[in-house]
Length: 451
Image (cartoon, rainbow, N blue to C red; front, side):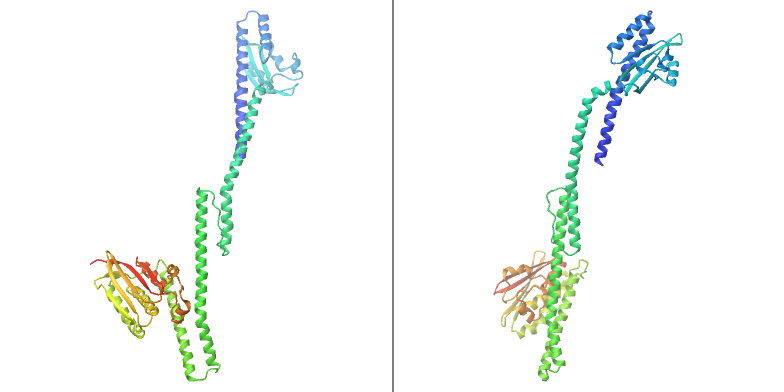
């Protein structure tokens, strides 16, 4: 398209320079010469003197000059051997001469097979056409001074066209190549392959688009990775209880186990595994709801210390069975704005973990205080602690520091993930500090309602 525009523009420029500049200039010169000869004719008293002027002009001018006292001969071509068998002017043009009009034309030369530029000037005396001056020149004489300019124009045009094609090719590569890569990579992404990236070489709009595309690919890859991990974890979590349930059920139904005590033991195991599956499904549904941005929280002012005391009461039996002392340091004046059911779930999950991992005879400390406009809730246990490298991951789904121990004790691996999402939806902050083999502190910060 660009090449076509350049060709048309170049052709138009060439035509303009040639037709409008050179040819028109030569036409004007011939007309001026003809008018001068006409004036000389009208002021001359001696025709021989005028004819000498014609001969002198013919020799010294670039144009050939013919004078005739019988304009009829111009349309017959008889006395002029250069135009033998051809009329110099047409019948219609002779009629214009009779009306006193100049005749200007460009016509093919019959002998040399080339174009000529001609001007015919009528000569009147007492309103009668007495003669005509015919001036003409070969257009080859007009072409010659234009040849060098035309060559320069052609060279410039070729260089410009080459430059435009080169620039267009570069621009096309810069724009089309990344888009083609995006198309190819997006097709792979649609098939589940999110590993491909676009090589970004520029910082322009296409480069920014490529960067955004790479960020999208990385995000989708991460989401896909988490999805696969989630499915693997769920499958793993369900496989064990289902294997227990299937094995013990078959043993009872096939009569392999006949002792009543053994049957009761196996039924108890089946019941425990069903309960763990129920808790797992319940926690998964909870987590799915909490991770939805549109999930609503029923926020209302509530005394946080009373909520904590209510949860502690439900765990006193479990704590007493493990001879674990629950130490309370609660500020009764603290009021927070939150969903009572979800905040109970936070305290319950954290206290359950603390009691679960605290050895027999140790203690769990629960503290509630305020700092400026923030309520600080802390649960400290005396358990085995969490290795430093595991701390950033403990809020991830199904992440366990000690998988075997956690599964034995009935955890689903989703408790801290649920706590994190609830605190986040309350515009709060969750922080976990731990010293390996010494204990763990979970700190929850929530916005405080000032009374």
